[in-house]
Image 1: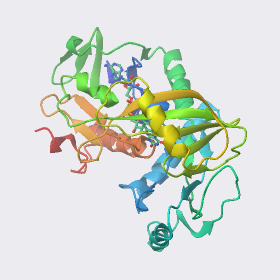
Image 2 (image 1 turned 135 degrees about the horizontal axis):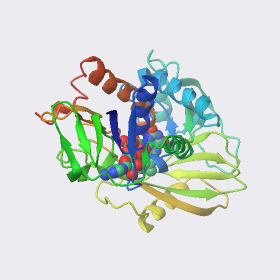
Image 3 (image 1 turned 180 degrees about the vertical axis):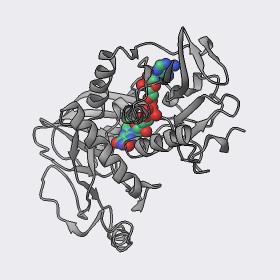
Length: 346
Ligand SMILES: Cc1cc2nc3c(=O)[nH]c(=O)nc-3n(C[C@H](O)[C@H](O)[C@H](O)COP(=O)(O)OP(=O)(O)OC[C@H]3O[C@@H](n4cnc5c(N)ncnc54)[C@H](O)[C@@H]3O)c2cc1C
């Protein structure tokens, strides 16, 4: 009898598997590459909402957990995966600069927002009102991390590169059975793919499509992440990720011409040097109506659990949510009401 079956290996699946590894639990993972959110993500960790300079939900607490989480995986996989990367927020007006200064005075943000304004010295960019700098932020090479980690799971013969067939799952009070495999629990971490899961498909995980263009520009020479109408995220070797879009209507996983045009228009508002588009990527963020993650146990089936709804901030949120879910299942530590699946299912 295994301890766990994990369905889906994006950021949520990874975060839960790390809990299992830490606690010596046995598991298998099913991953079918049907969703791309984690693999196309910018990989930025940043606790500040850059529209109004406010802290994101629980983000200040999550920074600590996430920081240790990724550093530990980096060490285990013995590859550079965590990159410190300050974010420069381009101001659009003097009024915005003033809002920034007010935010700098708030004790909760003091550590992250630099009270100094930064003059632009790069001719490639049009920055008329200076920058504000967010500190202690960075980028996780998440696609590489997930592939390396999956390789390790595969080597242990614990990976099934196939779709989980929900119809083949049977449950009893003490264990589940799936195609001859018995396990104490199933954790569903399918991101927006949850819409095909008969046990949890009615949850209000609405999905928000995001696209990036990947550009090459020899003349840009930027080493920080620049946030203006879009993000420019340096990946090294004169390659940058530019985006992302937010689309609530299109739920397809394919890239679109419309998103490309939107990103070009926004980029050229402040980028003044030549560049070439070398790629484009798309994914669906698993967003929830009330903008909080969803975790917990199915009200009718005590061994079926969900870890989902990471929205647009999975890098920071997933590690602490996985910790909460593990403690809930294994040690009966109650879940906070605002993240518990019970708020939508009884
Ligand atoms: C364009 C874009 C940019 C983003 N940038 C950032 C960023 O910079 N920072 C940040 O914190 N967040 C970012 N996000 C959000 C972040 O990517 C998400 O919060 C996170 O990826 C959600 O992870 P997840 O594991 O819950 O879902 P997913 O990444 O969707 O993973 C679910 C996995 O389950 C698999 N699956 C689904 N159904 C089945 C099945 N039946 N059988 C087997 N496998 C299945 C899928 O193939 C997939 O691999 C971005 C998202 C997008 C789209």
